[in-house]
Image: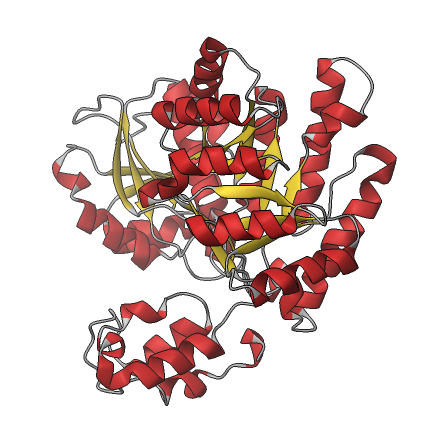
Length: 468
């Protein structure tokens, strides 16, 4: 059953219906609505985990089974989940598990270079709208085809990082040598083909790790999936092959067809996470390092928007990685929820009792733009963040999510009046229509600020503290 056709009542009938509140909701119906909207997980209902309600738990899990199976790679807090998606297009509901990006480490790389590469990759962080976005995994590639060297490199990597691993080799002996050392870390094996599938599936069953199936022929790929599942292997990923430049469209068509069949037609053999290796760009594109990195970044961007659940890359240049991280972050935000920050009072710099007081909304992009402009200008002030349900100033005013009463209440609750001896509030220029009402209900004198926060320094130099 498609998640879009599931009614909250279908779920409610299977819940304990005791309204115990252990899930965090006041009623079981409210919890059922959250389950259908993918805003909660079944395990939050504690009574449902008891033997008494096992039948209901099993039925709910079956009803809410994602179109794309979820596979966990790694263990502990650094484990990543790939797949687990319910819909094909983001606007239909939301995507759940952001595409992890794994950076490759060839086993022919010298040990000191391996250590340095790990350090560089783990240090690639960027604060984007209040969140640190970064890479996720390492993929150790057996470029030597030497099982002993491959195992040695895998051990070195696991000793230097706790990030999840992908073990890349078509040689079952090399994979086995590595699994003997790190199977307890639950790496993803990459890959089984029409030539080595029997040995690879046997290894993954024995060591209880997930496996990627690789074939450019989609019929053979789903045939491999059918064989693997019939042999008892549950955690599987699919790779129809990634080709760059003029052949990229063929790869994107393959990924799209697999996801379409999983989400739109309910074809379970296609309902596995999709893996893309853009490392092929370095083998198939002519040119220098920068050109290869550019093509890899372009290819990876296409894969992210075309349903790929895990990408294996070689480039670690900031200019190639950062756009991908921001693209991924934008796609995997919930389209039903504006990106917001916690409302409340922020102390900027080192303000005193004469420092200006101003407000903005809790729309994340607005807040961080204002914050950046204030910090760059080294302005000491109090910034009140008003809860507008994640809307920008202009939208919040138009939609009555930002009102004079709301501003007055936020002023009172913040306690900022006890921190300054004046009663002057600078409001955003785009909220100017509220100035009179805010003065009336709050008792504070309102100064209408600039339309853009970049104009705050000039505004303060000319009009602060203003007339009493």
